Amino acid sequence: MKHNFYAGPAILSKKVLTKASEAAINFNNSGLSILEISHRSKDFVEVMEKAEALVCELLQISDDYKVLFLTGGASSQFYMTAMNLLNENEKAGYVDTGAWSTKAIKEANLFGKAEVTASSKDKNYSYIPKDYSVDPDYKYLHITSNNTIFGTQYASFPDIDVPMIGDMSSDIFSRSFDHRKFDVIYAGAQKNLGPAGVSLVIVKKNILGRVQREIPSMLNYQTHIDKNSSFNTPPVFPIYVSMLSLEWLKDFGGIPAIAQRNEEKANLIYKAIDDSPLFECPVSKEDRSKMNVVFMPTKEGIDDAFLKMAESANCIGIIGHRSVGGYRASIYNAMPTESVKVLADVINEFSQIHG
Ligand SMILES: *Cc1c(COP(=O)(O)O)cnc(C)c1O
Image (cartoon, rainbow, N blue to C red; front, side):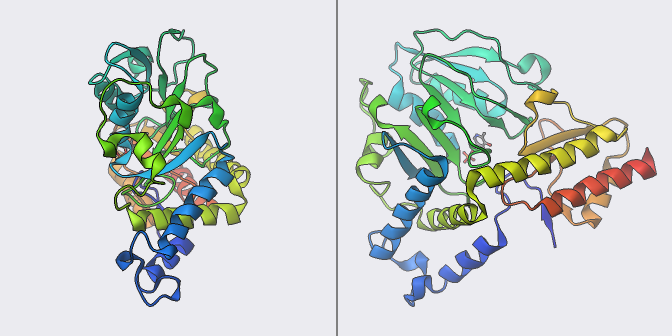
């Protein structure tokens, strides 16, 4: 068995993959593949409705919000949020916690004034900024709940007086949170939800309609709200697989059960790193991500040997992001505790041999 630590696209449960591959041949015993039926057919409309209902159930979303499944990746939300919410002469605040927030800031500046409210760039994004004041004139404050590349994560979300937007691409469904703190939540599916090709967007309906600019239909949240994410042909297969993975999560016991397992997994691997003289985690303790565990070698020249040992234990994808170096183990919802134990054992054993 391979232990898949890739950061994204990332691990999906075997059960989900088996069902998905069956539906690619014969969907719902229709004799047709899910890939060759109309997105307006009853069978697919049911998939869309079920996916939406599961998101609402698992995250306890209230009906003043709408759940959307859109294309273009989380990266398209960097500009869609600003385009739909920010007039040219208005400002919004951005908490800069690394590569993804930096990209979001750049795109928002095309539509209004994106101010960097706080940043952890001074320490190579190794912590989450906490003491900052939020300008009451901001139309919104944008945060990135989990920083996939640098391995930091908000342990709790700020209480602020302006609307908040959350890029939750790499930790949505990993833990409980109060969605009412946010006016827009978005997440590319390929980290913790499903395959690449669809993004989950959760929008508070009454924040729309306040910008003056003309918005192309496809980029207007209102279009997709009015048409239940089917204004044009939606990405049917990624939505179907995401729905299967939400069913899997529900069967697992929902968010409380998965949050507990995520906590256990993170503790296991951070303990192995903290106990080892050969590795260190650059992230301040209270901000450590429970999804993407970043760690660095403390000695030169051990890189190859460590990766070799990990590979021979079937641990795949633990090389760090090219902008950070070192190692990164992504331990999303679908990863079993067993796999994390295998990597923790590799770290322990390697440290005994080379430490
Ligand atoms: C992966 C990622 C993105 C980009 O997602 P795409 O779907 O590739 O556009 C944005 N934000 C975060 C936090 C991510 O992890």
